[in-house]
Picture 1 (cartoon, rainbow, N blue to C red):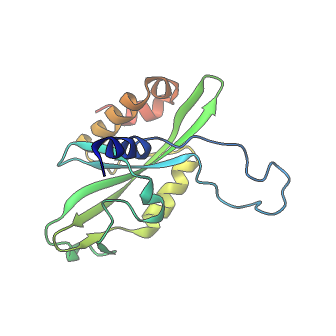
Picture 2: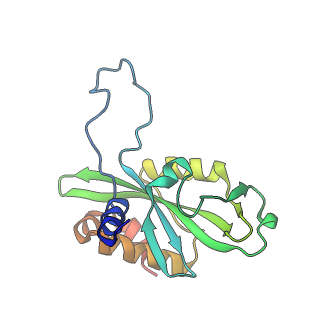
Length: 174
């Protein structure tokens, strides 16, 4: 892969998904009651590396962090953990344009060398749902991770950040 292909690939992976039209067009027939993930993006925050980035593969547990790692709901199986926060970020539209509507973080511990990891699937599912409902769930995150997430969202789009609710800005202002 050439460096320009890699650059284009990175650009594609670092985009937030934005709401499209209703897939059922309001008719209530086939597809009604299905869950649309068009307006949610997974952001990985790694406080030890000082990074935050979008990885759409996380929607199907196929992110770079998760590849080749066997996850269990038991922290003790991870001998040399690196802490990651998988943060579900929901984008909505209002009269001012797009904004970050919901943000919910989930702890992940990963030991790539030993191919072991910890994550709680119920927490991931519940926090994704909370994010989609416009809730801000970051109180369990450490201050450095919240700061990295806040900087990432602000730098990604100042307009979206400015349109976002004060609750979100206050929760990530560390």
